[in-house]
Amino acid sequence: MKVEIRMNRGFADPALRAAIRQAARAALAAGSAAGDSSLTILVAGDETIRSLNVRFLDTDAPTDVLAFPAGEEPAGDEEGYLGDVVISLETARRQAEVGGHAPAHEVQLLTVHGVLHLLGHDHAGPAEKAAMWAAQTAALAALDNPLSPP
Image (tube, rainbow, N blue to C red; front, side, top):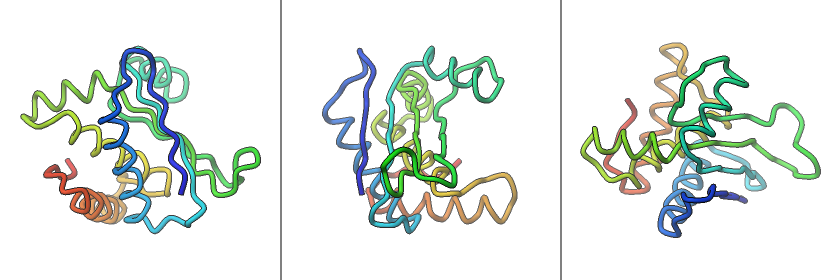
């Protein structure tokens, strides 16, 4: 499994990069991803994620995490490319402060959530939500992350 992590200028942090990589791998395992799966995670700020939210979801506001599945066909030459996850570190930090927990735990939760979306999980209906929350809980438990799905 290949997890590429890109961090926009001002958001680079080696410890956070490692926590994100662990979370992505835990989510891939919890979601039963194929061994040749790969994805990209971008850590950015509110302005970047707001811009993507406007462009792709017609919502003019920042959010915590966006997932862009690659679709039916692998992207380029990459077999098993799942897609991209974008995390706003600014929003994650605010949410962690409100929740009274470490920002790294919040970022891991958002990483797991985004990766599970790439694997086809959703939380639109009760059955889908239960399955996604179960996979998310399993991944977070494997990380010893004390957070649980909302």
